[in-house]
Image (cartoon, rainbow, N blue to C red; front, side, top):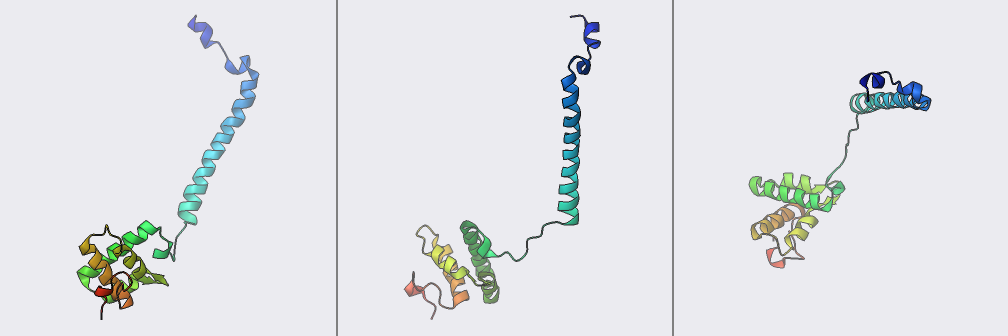
Length: 139
């Protein structure tokens, strides 16, 4: 085709329905972009950001609770601070020592990890895990 003919081709004059459709679409897209910027950035991150408070181990998934108990058991094995272990595992009615005993009763648990879990449970509840391991009860 001749390039001069293509340059003189006016889309909106040839197809008037395109002009009626294009203008509201552009305005809607621009309004959506401005609304997202104002809503997310200004309101959501600057003016009224969401702050999660009061969440504890009882609000975590079971796998994350087990990871949390394992970290506390490792910390207790390193520091031997019963106060820290009690504060971390007996948090707002959540019984982390029960989770530690359940993890220690799992056959796939490493023996060293098992002893750390029983020790941290004994630091929290004073007796360890008497149901699973009666011979290892702290007396």
